[in-house]
Image 1 (cartoon, one colour):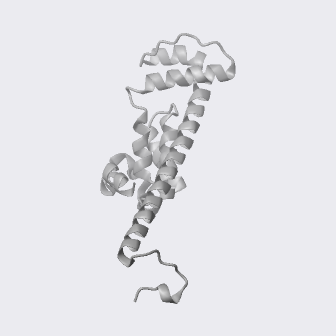
Image 2: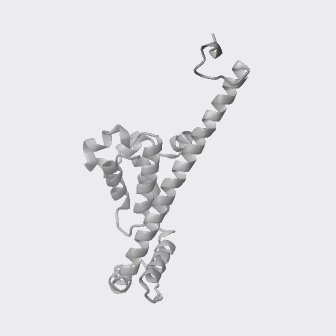
Image 3: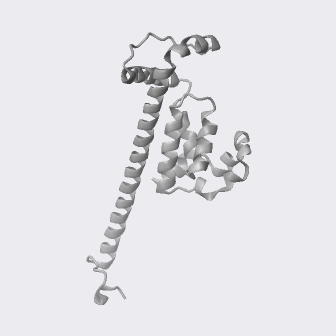
Length: 187
């Protein structure tokens, strides 16, 4: 699990030197932002997935700020924001709008999304409440799901490593060792 994240995440020096993150200054030098442990990865996953579904410009900067505030893995938080990208944003936000409308008990209006300021000013005024509620629900659900999934996968990996270690020990010493008895210690 740890090796997967080491291979997948951008290198620390690349993220630290990113021009848009330079205003964080010395905060980027906190070692907790770069650790690959269970707490850091689960928290970074939750932050990144939560911010991914928030309809806010400059999501990467917001994810970086929250990763610094919560002292979780910064590269993972910033990378996971790209779950929603120019290809996935329209269907994700339409689903969020439908979900918000259902939760608020509103009728679903046909919405044709176009990336223009005219659409933003004309259409968003009618749908902002269900859209924001749906985005918040999706953000919360995805953050919790990601947190739990990484936590479960991490625990399974640790359990598998302990079992492998135990099997090697049994193979090496010929039987299960009982700790606490002096006569079972290998000498």
